[in-house]
Length: 366
Image (cartoon, rainbow, N blue to C red; front, top):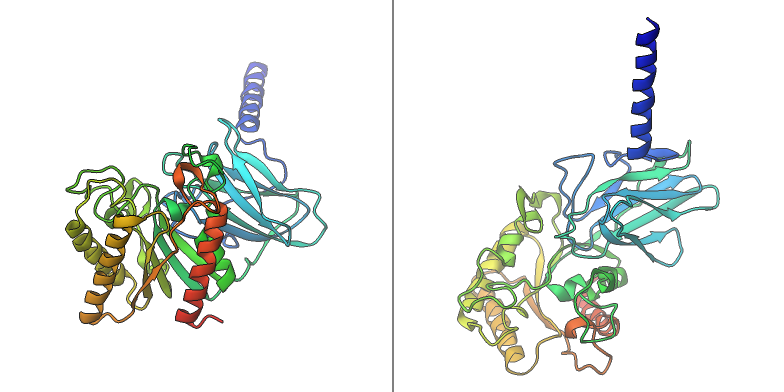
């Protein structure tokens, strides 16, 4: 009997030690299934306790009581931007091999607080997931903050992702540390218009061929395929388009199709027409704007603009009168470049100003 009791005590002690090593969380743990957590963007809930996401712009928002809040996520999930109450937005990093809990706010005034958390990189090789929040002992979540009534979907490539926009050297390579979707033209436009967005974007992606692909195209690695799924490079979960029906869709594609001297404009046009029909099929009531990005110049710029004009014109003739066109001012480097010749923070700010003015008039969002 004494031997049995000793063994039981050893098992309980070992179990307790293992639990403390795997989950050393002090306070009130809020799991992802809590109905007071507000999710924005394409998120896969096949495991409700660990929702997965890869697209930049994904948001996880909440209101809470207490004096602190921590984020619990998969180690090496990447980078977020946090807006805590009325403080200036700041970057939050989960980059360590084992770090899974990071403090977002501490020593806050007693009372109610609001956290808006945005994933700001493209996490297709990081495969991040969210595991919950940690509050003070006895603290709780409140009903989430209200979302704006104005809704946009941005479909794009590295420009929309924010590739290298925190770098100031055009010769810098891609690094997650210098990609910040929160500071892109897309999110700046949303904030100016009082809207929120879902984002479907990935660096290097095209309509008929992605960057450096063969002239004949890369049909399994283009936006027409990725658009149907919840996460990048993951065909396990088809996106349910009924979960988000935007009032406006902005498509910023074509740069990678034309980025190397190995393109076929005819193939680009036919693929773009099919993709427009695909987007329209999923978003029957939205206005759709075909954007020409800021990185092209010369012959390729004129060819893309002409192609988009023809696609829009043919859509109108086919009865879809809610397709529109907008061209960003091409970058010249006068306000610097980001990494790998991508738009700098200042170029994104300029793009946002141009697009905001156009969309404000188009949507009558005054």
